Image (cartoon, rainbow, N blue to C red; front, side, top):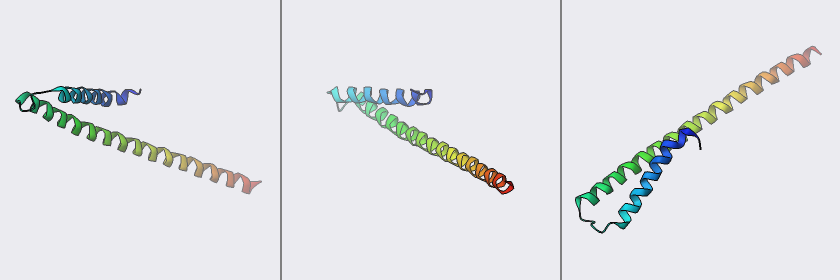
Length: 87
């Protein structure tokens, strides 16, 4: 796995751990349980934001690659036309 995704994977692992803790708790009225729920909510929020950021970065990178390939293709076509014209 790419190093870029490691923090996201760690966050996801922590979220799953919390889910298991929350599911097995019996003291649903306690402050400790409420803290777990609040932490879970915050981690889910962070995960969604970071996931959206990764998607945006991948989209931006894809667009840059496509733009670069378009420029290369355009240059190759122009060179071909110039060379062909002089033949």
